Each structure stands twice: as structure tokens, then as C-alpha cells.
Image 1 (cartoon, rainbow, N blue to C red):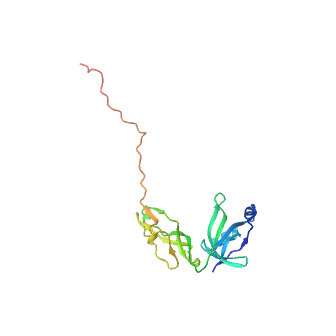
Image 2: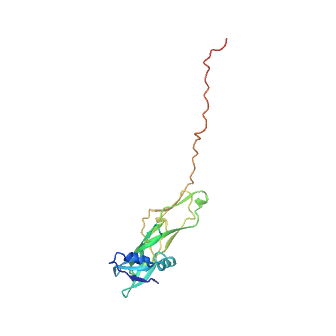
Image 3: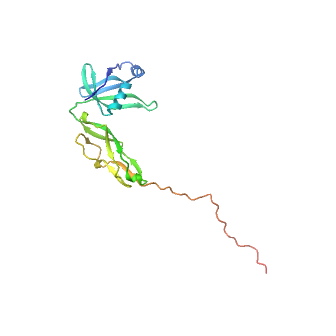
Length: 207
């Protein structure tokens, strides 16, 4: 069941409208996709952040705009890196019966046995692209790394198939590896004094 999210239409004619929206504690947004075409709206910043934390990045949100109900996904967003704040979001209107593509977080679970032996775990991919109907999009894909030894790697092709979604990321893409421990090279001590070479005497021996 979709989570209700309140939105308000916003005026884009005034240059200061975006600033006023943010000063009011709301985030400028745009709705597009199924039965919607570039509708400028705003959402309450705290409400959106709370909804995403509770229901996940790929949750379906139910909104009402101009008397029409739409199901939307949080498709893209922009963050002010200096203030660490959301400054704009794209809401993709979806047909609940049609598949969509989405980015899904990769969560590593367990502790690789190679790490216990001193190896170094290296996660290469942090997200995967999947295709599913909106209500079947996972929030994260868990990858068990417990059996990885030093020198082992897991690729996308090693993940088990799931009936709810299809992974679209290339199968040969490497997810995670366990590298051999790094050996620090000991540099020679260049400050040590060099041994003095023996010199023969220039004086004639005493007879």
C-alpha cells in the first residue's frame, strides 16, 4: 500500500518562488511520468525525509494533485553538499502494473573468512539497477560475503535470481573482492654512515 505524501502546486513564474518555498521549510519538486507532465509542486522537507526513512528510498508514495490521485517514486534528487540538505526532488508518476528501472542499494552481510585471515575487503559496487513493478522494488539487496576467502570475488552473476525483480546491471560487474593483505616495504636506512675504505700508506717502510 502506498504511503500518502502531501504536495502543493507552486508558481514558477516568479524568480523568487523557489527561494520562498525553501524558506518555508519545503522542497521544490517536479512531477512527470504516467498521466503527469512536468507539474511543479513542493513537499514538506521534514515529512519527506521522515517518509523515506520509514518506508525506504524506493517506496511508492500516493499524492493528490488537481483532484487526481497519482502514485509516485522518488526518482532523482539534488543535495546542497555544503549544507547537506535536499534542495530539489523529481517525483516519477508510475503505473503500478508496469515495470520501472530503479537504483537499489547493495548491503553486505556477514564477515568474510578472508578478512579474518588478514585480507582486505573491497566493495566495488554500492548500487544495482533493477527492473520491477513499483510495489516490488526492493529497498536493498543483501549480499552474503561470509564464504569469501583471500583472492575471492563476487560478481553480479553470482547473485541468486529473485522472482520479484530482475537485475539489469551487467553480469560481469564485480561487486566485492577480498584482496591479500598489504605488505609494507622496508626502505633501506639511507642515514647510516658508510664504512670507511682502507687506504694504503704513502710513506716508504723504515729499513
